[in-house]
Length: 205
Ligand SMILES: Cc1cn([C@H]2C[C@H](O)[C@@H](COP(=O)(O)O)O2)c(=O)[nH]c1=O
Image 1 (spheres, rainbow, N blue to C red):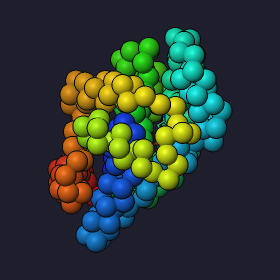
Image 2 (cartoon, helix red, strand yellow):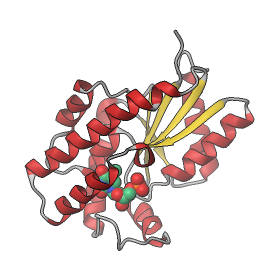
Image 3 (cartoon, helix red, strand yellow):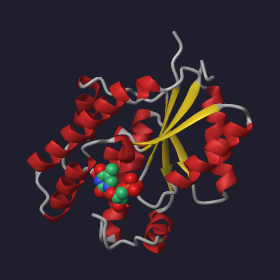
Image 4 (cartoon, rainbow, N blue to C red):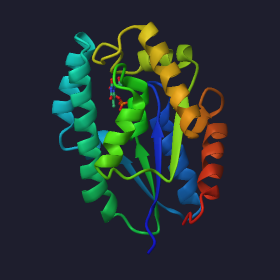
């Protein structure tokens, strides 16, 4: 039985995931692939409540609170796996903006191995290709700061926290063998790197 190819893009803020995802979708569509663009944020019915806890935890870091956030995000991904991913055409390529690897960037207290297990226990679908999008922290911080919504409304306020996010994320990318995409030069280069990785996945539509 065939099912869609599931590709996730994760990374610290300002790494350029969404822009890259758009560019990848364009190239794949030009090659007559059926591309489904999804985002964890937009597909998650419980996102508002979870992000309120994320904001609370940014103000008052606490292990139990962080564990609750991890559980809630994993529950949401299980819901998306069951109700959204199963509804996509079997011959499509799903590009997902954020999935469980993003927890490797944002969670400070719960070890990522534990977070991964929470996701596995809930039957969260594992991507066929995990793409970690990073830049040097200076570049992604400047990009995030120049966005229209700015840094004001977000939960990471200090550049030191952003550096820690980037380092923690890169560590997990290496330790899990995810694809590392350094998105700090020409967007075309990063795009073609990911495209070539997608075409290498066995069973790619
Ligand atoms: C998914 C997630 C996002 N964030 C932050 C990063 C961004 O500032 C903001 C929205 O992220 P996004 O638009 O890149 O998905 O929320 C967290 O702090 N923790 C999380 O678990």
